[in-house]
Length: 424
Image 1 (cartoon, one colour):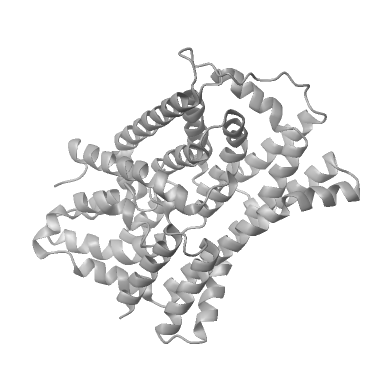
Image 2 (cartoon, rainbow, N blue to C red; image 1 turned 30 degrees about the vertical axis):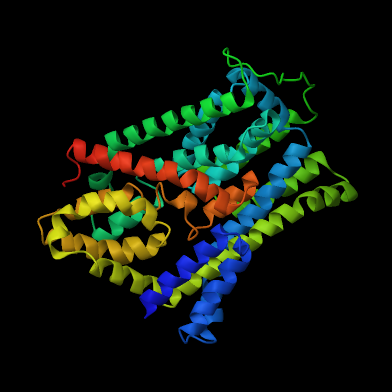
């Protein structure tokens, strides 16, 4: 009953969002609440929602203050010289801009946080796309691919897989190093193709130079101190592992005091960016409520057990290859904790009966389950953060980016089989 109810909830939710019958905010609240009430949970539903909201509170707070911080910095002109420098370096070439987007996202994602990756990459690159008239869905796609393929030993999926199966991280990750390199090659190949397509659409000449010249502009006041503050913010999150919400809260205060010391000027800058920040924060809280209902009601656990039951007995030896192929789409159905702590141990135990080492199941999961899958999953807040920063709708992002992420997952699965990491 719970498995069926959970499946229907997710199907109805995705249908409502993709067909534009409901906004993501409304769908993420109304549909799971209705499902919980239908399942007989009654007033407990409110507690489920609160638990889920508490889980995303830090991300939502980070989002609000990050929007304010980068908004104030943009108003102060801090990004203008950086944008001009990058534009000159890439020759106003969409191909190089898209590939540069992937490179930047890849480097930032070394800290393992998708939210931080999007918070840093998008504000830097979005003005380039806007200035050249490029499709912003390409920006979201390029950043998503780079972050999704970059599954490192300290990232959440790797740590969950190691803990749930009691396998050292090195045993999972080390054989996957050539697979990840193949995945990164796919990312930059796809970014090159997307950039070439944008160049043709915008009518760039064969030299790759744009008709949009980079206008010479004077360096804004307080550029150096603003740049140092931004670097300190990024370093605090990545190098020193400080809580992003705390870092951005302090950053907003300093940014306002440095650039807009007057009370009225500070109020104006906050008001100028408050709508965008609060609108997406509302969606993040709604996503938390949705996840809280699905997890605490037991619907996700029931779905996990039911999914395992569908595996034919003779298919055990093929489970690693099959999991690698479908791991990315499974990210839309299961949140990371439910899969890695609920589904993966059962799958690994089942596969072991057919002589398949549990480490292969862990490695197969790395090929898509909330790695390439997380940037389009409604069960994690980072994708909503991404689309909010880029300024597109979630359904647009899913339709455009999902095929590329799925292709990357399938490609890495094939490479795994070819080099003998996974058995078939």
